[in-house]
Length: 543
Image 1: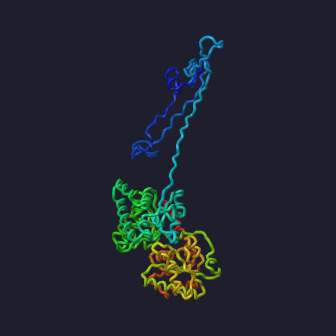
Image 2: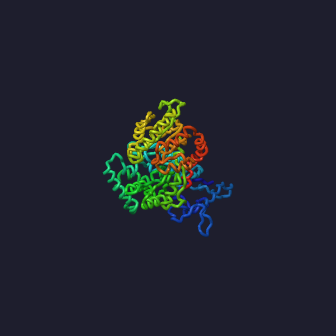
Image 3: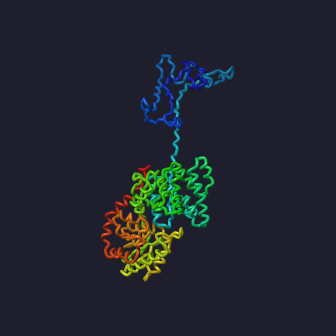
């Protein structure tokens, strides 16, 4: 009876020509379907070539089962083992039992070869998170803009869970490295308008950075890459983030506007510059709900049309802004009516404001917000009219609190300065909030009010979403447009028209009976808030 040997390697198989391999159907490799090297016309699974059947992967035929040969047939088993032969690797030289004579070869023990199945390990490449840059953010000391940014970040993360979200805005990264866990990059706009730099230095920055960034937009990619290296660090940081992003979101607000002259031109240019840089890199840019205009110059209108016309989603928060964009040449199919994101801002209560203000639970509290907006003489008349109205309110037994909706040093836009002057004009001193209050905490003040006389429009939104009636003083078209949407247009007065008699004519009826106003809020507000919460769905649908 023959002797089985261990399975040999390829060299041994060549030496033992009588050994036969199992007849197995092997899969013949063909061109890889969908491979990167297949060119721009490559096919994927399920695609069809002209005149051919659907491309599919073929599986190799199954290997035949190994069977032992019948006894006495003389057939060699197809197991890689050959009887009667000793391969060189299987020969073992052993000495004779008596220790004399040459070594003899003893037959090897029968060995069964177990074929091991080769398992191919597929490396799963980790997919990086979606990179999103939120641009044109303002400062957290402006409670309205901070609320818009807060809602924008929440809704972007809701639309794209796990996304890497960064903010490019007007806050110094060295002072505020992040906003609600989103890293702060700083911005081109902040760099050229840095309030800590002298006026001459800001002008030089605008000229240099504006010319350099225009080169990034106009020059070939090779030259633009060289130019990028000589940009200031903060400018380069935002430019690189925009070029490497998957999506750019221009946060809500009212900053896409211009005035006549050079100042208006440079403002709209630097506001839209990150949009143009992202579009140059092929990155989609969407515009969260905001106001647009006015644009007095044809050059400004062309620039707006170029930037916004390439966007997959442009949301305008009132009809006046839709008309402004239509005047820039944008068709109605590009612009979508939206709702101010401030209506979706609802932070949890963080403290007892009545206790902090020293107001009894049953005391009626009326809030007032004011701002610097007019020329000096008109501004003084506006402040004195507010002071006279405060005196009239407090004469009814209510208490008035002046609320600083904005308390930033940037551009000296600090409502506390204006409100101190108003309080000084009052016969009976109103309550003043002198501290800088966090934008989430500030909404708690409005929840305690029975009525608001509001110039800052997001103070009006904070109150309306708390169920508090408001008289709105309009300084931009967003105020009248949004109040008209809610059926409250009769409770709006332009800031240029504010006098004590006119303002008191709107305030006094609400102090006597506000039930009709509150009923209007109950009917209209829930749908308005739900529409504001629809931005994540619009964002996903647009992309």
